Image 1 (cartoon, rainbow, N blue to C red):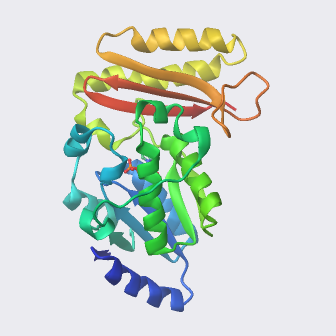
Image 2 (image 1 turned 180 degrees about the vertical axis):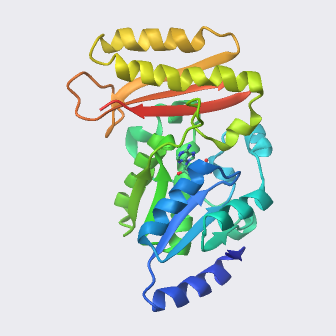
Length: 278
Ligand code: AMP
């Protein structure tokens, strides 16, 4: 695997590859890689000649400085995992390589920025768009891969690509879970064994809502889901919503594509998860 830390060296390599008509796929990550990340790389390898994985803990998307500080950084293990799955290129830039001082970014994506995750993490999606736009501009991939785990993020990036008319095909990949149902996440490293046990309630509740979708009103489902999750004092419930999968506005039983999304703090770790109901 080739490893680049600078835009210039990465672009020199990719320009040569492009001249040979090679198709480039990009998998943006913040590192602390797990099987959820490698599933994206494997998917990318099916249709691209060169798969670039970026590892960059993006400061502008953290609304809480403590969260940024304690975000896990495990570069050596990440490189080993990327080599195992035959990733072609790792782009691992410094913050200074990506950002000039006091750089500004704002793109109006309407309500999507302010609901669900946006409500709990002000500014988060502007930071996500800012860095993904830069990565797209540096790598210029034909395809880019994201996880359903961050469902709203996928809609945000899709909207950004539409508004900025970038010609990049985006693919959303299924959530990879632990055998007990917990969605894999870099943040799971912060969970104690006890927290991990508690955290399983999130995926259990999502599954329960899916199974009972046509048996109860949506209000009754939401009430029950909230009770199930907040019954333990070590869990701080943030939201549980059943929404239209395209607009993220509240769904009803007739809505064509329905997604349930949840966020909660388990111990000191904030977790999110979701499930496609139909
Ligand atoms: P992150 O490093 O957390 O920014 O995630 C990088 C990419 O991996 C994002 O597109 C995530 O949605 C995706 N991802 C994270 N966890 C999972 C998972 N458990 N299954 C599938 N994709 C995931």
